[in-house]
Structures are given as structure tokens and as C-alpha cells.
Amino acid sequence: LQCYQCNRVNASGICVSGGGFCQTKGNQQCFVKKIYKDNIIFYGYRGCSSLCSPMMLFNLNVAVDWKCCNNSSLCNKF
Image (cartoon, rainbow, N blue to C red; front, side, top):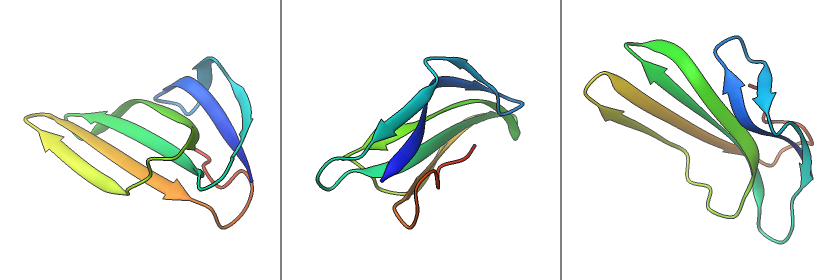
């Protein structure tokens, strides 16, 4: 399974650091993590991960949305 990889995705969905692709190994899945501040997308990450548990975390005015997928290659579009 091939996934998009990016160390930092800006609010417009453009990779600004460490862009490319990764290949999952073993039980890995593709993931996309989005950080919201005051309910507005702030930045995010995407790549391959063994620790994939979809969740939404809230802390004051910041929210973290973590989603995983393994249904098709490049399923973790921002």
C-alpha cells in the first residue's frame, strides 16, 4: 500500500516539508492527522504508521483529527 507522506501540510493542503510517498510494511496503514485551531484547519501531517487508531482529541481551542485508511493506495489525501 502506497501512501502520501508529508512532515507538514499547510492549511491549504500543500506539503511544505518532507513530501513524497511511503510504502506500508506489515500491519501499517496510511494516516492523515489534521490540527485545528479555533475550528479552522491549521496544519497537518500524513504518512505510514503502525499505530493507527482513528480519533478526535480536543484541548481548549485546539483539536486533533487522526484518520487511518488501508482501502486503496494514496487514500490519505489531505
